[in-house]
Each structure stands twice: as structure tokens, then as C-alpha cells.
Amino acid sequence: MAEQQFDIVVLGGGSAGYATAIRATQLGLSAAVIEKDKLGGTCLHRGCVPTKALLHAAEIADVARSGESYGILSSVAGVDIAKVNSYRENLVAGKHKGLQGLLKANKITVIEGEGRLVAANTVQVGDDRIVGKHVVLASGSYSRSLPGLEIGGRVITSEHALELQEIPGRVAILGGGVIGVEFASVWRSFGAEVTIIEGLPHLVPNEEESVSKQLERAFRKRGIDFKLGVRFQSVSQDANSVTVNLEDGTVVNADYLLVAVGRGPATQGLGYEEVGIEMDRGFVLTNERLATNVPGVYAVGDIVPGLQLAHRGYQQGVFVAEEIAGLAPVIVEDVNIPKVTYCDPEIASVGLTEAKAKEQYGDANVTSYEYNLAGNAKSSILGTAGSVKAVRVVDGPVVGVHMIGARVGELVGEAQLIVNWEAYPEDVAPFIHGHPTQNETIGEAMLKLAGKPLHAI
Ligand SMILES: Cc1cc2nc3c(=O)[nH]c(=O)nc-3n(C[C@H](O)[C@H](O)[C@H](O)COP(=O)(O)OP(=O)(O)OC[C@H]3O[C@@H](n4cnc5c(N)ncnc54)[C@H](O)[C@@H]3O)c2cc1C
Image 1 (cartoon, rainbow, N blue to C red):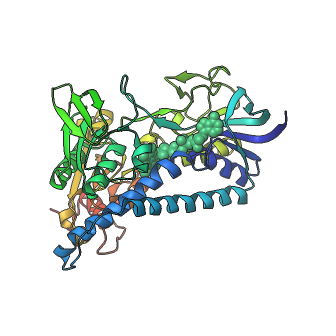
Image 2: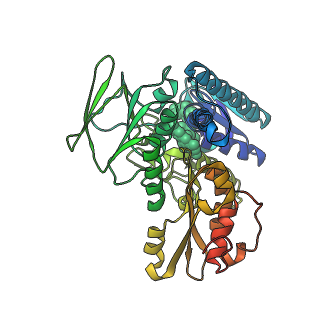
Image 3: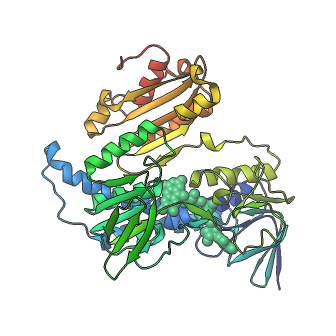
């Protein structure tokens, strides 16, 4: 049995885990990452990157289909799913190679194998004991299902959906959250009949309500069907199809049912409870500085309750490394982390919705302005509809920005700076945006809230 010692031992080499190790070695600490599968985790291999590759292929199909309205004589002769898949796989393989090189360049020890926490300072991998002055748990998440809903055959999760070698003719999607609407968008662009089933009253229910409603309008226009406020009851399948029964008696027939009801923490059987770590339904509980109740043990990424996003994982990893190094880093609350949903139209937001802001500050102390993309030249050039809504405290800072429309994910960087710096519209309104860009929409919203609208009334 061999023993290796490090300043920081990270269990899990996904976004959160490898970010911890990179920042740790930059700060002069020695770090090991234990990974049982592939460095990069869910985001790189089964999440962010491959889904966005599919969405890009889908966008190309849509652009080709709509070419004629711009005077370009194009059409979609078909979708070669094998080629789409090899584009996706090559992209992921390239990024994986790059990531391996990055960790090597940062002198991080990567230990291949399945780790188990056997003491507050030790992870066991096979016969080897990897000992750290600090241990960072970063074991990530898995696709959840509902009680009694078994995954298998034509009832699939996002992992299986990515690997499909065909474009389904008809597909049902259980869950109208981020993953559900992204796959709906891809499959519709590839020509499938899509039905989303969502138990809550709106698609993307965590977003500003006006954004959800605009998405529903856009999806309806695209021919994506959805059933809202109705719960799943049962599913049966045969060799060629699935039959999905809903509690209101509706029956949805499809080739596949994608179950997209959220992700659970991958913590079972890893020794966390045995070492005395406080858990809640499988999630690792931490204080606001990401320390668990066991001294020297931290947790980052999807196993920590809250938003499950790769960039939250990066930020938490960097935070924990800096915390261990004694740099007292700044906490970024989940609410101020930007969120992007890459369906068509895209959705991006940061900060409080108007309803939440009113709960927090009182109805009379909150004001908002929703700028319609119809007033923005670049959005009209692109042929996209949508809006940018900014929420501010009266005579106070901007506390939320909520956007929908083509490419708005690229605008959320500025929005998150405004919200995180607690900027007043009056502070940022004088700054200039290139014309014609979609960035101008944020400028217009700030101008209006500062009382000097330009292309708005
Ligand atoms: C379909 C889909 C699309 C997504 N799209 C986006 C997006 O566009 N943007 C975004 O920000 N987020 C997106 N996400 C979420 C994002 O992928 C996760 O938030 C992120 O990967 C979490 O990082 P993590 O490091 O916490 O966990 P993971 O990425 O899950 O990494 C955990 C790692 O730990 C390893 N591991 C687990 N147990 C052990 C063990 N015992 N021993 C050794 N290794 C172990 C796993 O193999 C894995 O590599 C998406 C997720 C999905 C499923």
C-alpha cells in the first residue's frame, strides 16, 4: 500500500475539482486530483460542451432553413446525425486533450481511479492512500429520475440523448427546465415533433415570468408542443415507442421519453457520512465559505446545494483554494451567478427576478424596465424577438437583469458586472456600446432607468 501526501487532495476531476487544483498550484500548494472517469467531468463530456455543440448544429440548420428570407437560396437537405455526432465528439476530445495539458502544465498530480473518503484527511484509491492537509470533495452529479420511473430502453436521460444515433421522429421530454428546453430546441431544429411535459405553470420556471412567457410564445411558433401544470403519471414502452400518461388523462406518444427532472448529488457510497460529514438528501452541507463541519474538508460544485452550473463550480474551486491559502476570497452568492439557457431563443439572467426583489425590498421600493429587442437594430438584423428586463431598487442599485432573444448569453457578462458591482443605472448609463450591437439593449435599459431613454419611450 502506497501513501502520497499533498497540501490539497481533490476527489473528482470535473469543473469544480480541477479548478480547485489549478488555483491551488498557482498559489504554491501541491495538489492531486482523483478521477475515476475522464478529467472535465459532466460539463465537458456529457453536459455543457456537447449539448452546445448540438445546439450550434441545430442553429446552422435553422439558418439554412431561413436563408430565403434574407435572399440566400439555401435549404436543409437533411441532417447527417453521424457527422453531427463526430463533430461533437471531436470537439470534446480536443477540449479534453487541452485540459489534460493544462493540468500537467500546472504540475497537478492526476490519480486515475475511484476514490473513497476513509478519514478526514485521506482518500483511498485501490490500495493507495492519498493524504491531504485539506480534502476537497467534488464528486459531481448524476441524472435523476422520479420515484417509479425507471430509466432504460426508450426512456432516456441526457447522457443517452447525446449519444443517440438517430433523430427521433417524435420525442417527449419530462421537465421544462434548462436541460429539457435545450434538447427540445435541438430536436425541433433537426425536424422532430417535440412535446415537453412540465409540472409547474411555466417552462424554465426559475426564470423571470415574462421571460418564460416569451419562450413559450417562441416555442409555440417553432411548433414545439408543451403541457404545463400537469404531472407525469406513468410510461410504458415497446420496441418502437413510448406511451406517456399524464395525471390529467392526457396521453403522449413518442419514440423516446427524455427524463430531464434535475440532477442529484453523486455522493452515495463515497464514505462521506462515515467520516461524519453533515449531509442533506445526498448533498454535502457547507458553511458560506464552503467548509464542511469536518475540519479540513471542503466541498465544491454540484454536490453543494444550489445552482448546478459549471462556472459556479469553477468559482467555488478557485474560492476554496484561495481560502485554504489564507487569501480570504470574496463570496459570490448563487443569486448573482449568471445563468444561460442555450435554447432558441436564448435566455440569460443574473440577480433577482422582479417578484423576488419585491419580496426582499418591498413592492414600493422596486422598479423595472423591459426593453423590447424590436427597438434594437442588431436584433432586427438577426431577426430575433425578445427583451432585456432590468430590475432596480428605487434610488438604488440594479439587482437583476433578465434577457431572452438570439445570442443574449453573450450579454450576460456585462449584466453580471452591473449586478455584482451593485451599480446604479445612473453610474453605468453614460458608458457607450458599439452600434449596432445587441449590447446596446443593456445600455438602453440603463438609460431608461436613469431617466434619459434614447431609443425607448
Ligand atoms: C446535459 C447537461 C447540460 C449542461 N449544460 C451546462 C451549461 O451549458 N452550462 C453550465 O454552466 N452547466 C451546464 N451543466 C451543468 C454542469 O455540467 C455541472 O454543473 C458541472 O459539470 C458540475 O461540475 P462538478 O465538478 O461539480 O461535477 P462533475 O462535472 O459531475 O464532475 C465530478 C467528477 O467526479 C468524478 N467522480 C465522482 N465520484 C468519484 C470517485 N469516487 N472517485 C473519483 N472520481 C469521482 C466523476 O467521474 C466526475 O468526473 C449541464 C449539465 C448537463 C447534464
